[in-house]
Image (cartoon, rainbow, N blue to C red; front, top):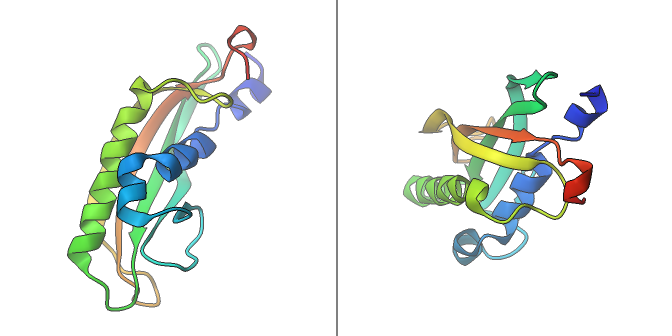
Length: 145
């Protein structure tokens, strides 16, 4: 296993694409409201990688922590953000059973790392946050991509 093989096993782009196109998330948010930054319009999902996880050079397995945040408007409903967060977590639970993405790593499992909770942004914008562990491996050359 080469270091660059593990570097290519970054599940974040796959997770972002999955959530951004998932029918349940789209029905709740509409298009273009999933990304890595807190930018209007709100509500939206911010999805980022956070410290934690592991890499195994012997097996090619990567375990990465991904933070999912439901962000709302100032004075927005906490209940609506909690619902959005758990819809997103439910969508992520479906990812390992889905057809593999055309590029990027093969997702083996998605599981909870830290349960969801209310944690406002520094500017007091309402936010619900949870962390999941995504386990994956690089796509081998015979698999395409």
